[in-house]
Image (cartoon, rainbow, N blue to C red):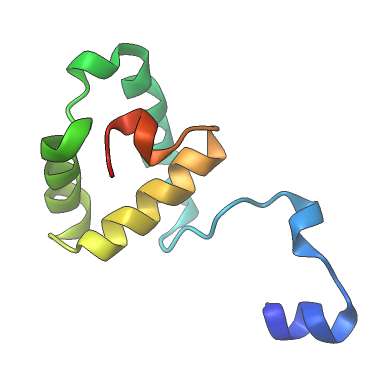
Length: 89
């Protein structure tokens, strides 16, 4: 998209699409709802803090930490939260 946007002089930030999610829209919507509902009770949320990061990485990303970071970054940005809100660093 960046080559097209540069060639056409487009600014995709104005579309407010948010961060790129490296999987399907179905998975994005499902994970977003899991994360959004988990923030209602963050102290008991199984994906909070470092151990929660490991659980999320194993359950959704087959242990791929880079993928887990990308997925969660896109989801958090879409609901106005950050890694710090989850206790991820």
